[in-house]
Length: 535
Image (cartoon, rainbow, N blue to C red; front, side, top):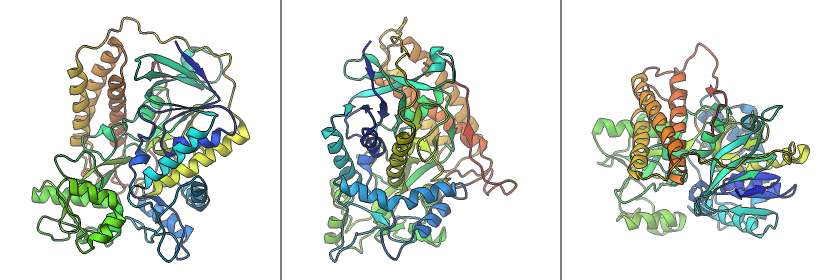
């Protein structure tokens, strides 16, 4: 079996992973792996931008309060202040790496406004901000001799000393990976493993996420015994394009920030009935409002109306969105844009500090895969890229003080054991289970929940996980099997987390407990399963 050694092993090539790799390269050798092409990440699909205080009319305190308000009482205020306060310095660092944000004709940044923000503070590069950032960071990684970037390599499971039977405190010492091209499994050994794998929107039937978002980091961490927090808080983006040929195309919240109204089929605005901020209310409120309007009216979608803006303005401000809509016969300047909510962002994840530290020594987690306490029960728009930037820097600062961790030179990672597994000959089984998991989550653990729906989801997910685990053990490992295994594991975590929260808070809304639980202070939902024979 092929084996690689490095000082720092980073899983994921989005903003969090690439920034971490760039920073960590100052302290030792770095291997980065991504399960598809190097540019295939949620960062690359991010349209809106980075929320950061960059205007004299704005303030750090205003951004903090907007974040706390959106988080519905569950944010950790110290974390919010640390990340928001560090934002301007991190933006300057991005610019030094070659990222250019849109500017006003008269000077200064062209700042956008999105839902939940009381000021214009979203830096952007048109409507393909993530792509600009991803391109600049990948260029820096490509040029760095100390960073080895592996494409088409998928994480199978973490390797811990507890699983290996090594005496002492259980710690992470590496991982097994699948080479998607050759089909071979190999190992990477490192004293520090960084999970920056993003979220898991593909757990749901309808999502704005790219196909890679199958919750891999959360699943492997859970199987290794790491606590998972607040996974009931799944953010559904209110406005994904509704068209039979449009696959997961997001209509950025920035469109509403530039004046688009949410209307029904007759052109009547409805958000004012749900929140004083109207179409710029926080995402949980907007998504629930659209969901209710669709159910009450029987309509398959609602609409965005930005026809008061000129074609020239829309083409300039939203070039990518404008052209994409045109491909589906929708002219933003002349037509209503059909939209529906779709799974978008995980506010929960691996319990981690701002510096990435987890409960398992040797394992760090940053970006969407981590739950730091910034987002609470609902993420404020465009705070995610800010979190990735700041946490990557804090992780590097931590490593600068502590070093790469306890040496792993004496640790032997054994060859991968195929056992009696045979090549799978029933692809229909994988496809069927894949669709059943995603449909189950969408139908029973979506925007509006009930105890009965969650109980149904629990029974179905438990049965599916047993079938999938047996299929995983009986057949040679493939990427499809790994992704199926991961979405089923993450699906169970979402259901269990939702069942534990007997109140409606932020993104978790249940008809059985429609208000906040005032009998006790807000607290995180944490699932702490003991580590077992997870490989």
